[in-house]
Length: 87
Image 1 (cartoon, rainbow, N blue to C red):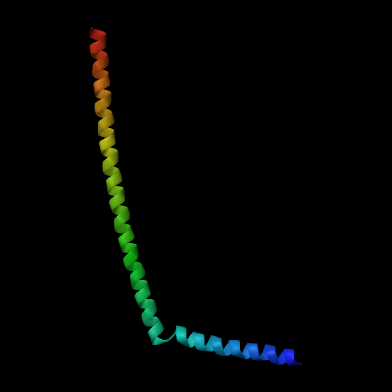
Image 2 (cartoon, one colour):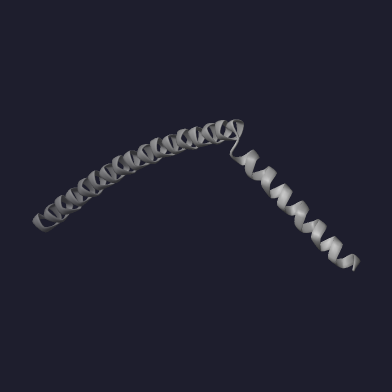
C-alpha cells in the first residue's frame, strides 16, 4: 500500500516539476537567453567561415607557387639535357 503512495507522489512531483520546467523554458527571460546564445553561435559560425576562406586562399597560393617551382625546375632539367646532348 505504501508503494502506491510513493509512486503517486513521484508521479505528481514529476508532473509539477515538468509544468514548472515548461513554464521556465517558455518564459521571457529564457527566450532572451536563447536569442543571445543563438546570436553567439552565428558570430562563431561567421568567424569559422572567415578562417576557412583564409586557409583556402593560402592553400591556393601555396599550390600555385609549388607549380611554378616545378615548372622552373623542369625547364632547367630540359635545358641541361639539351646542353648535354650538344656536347
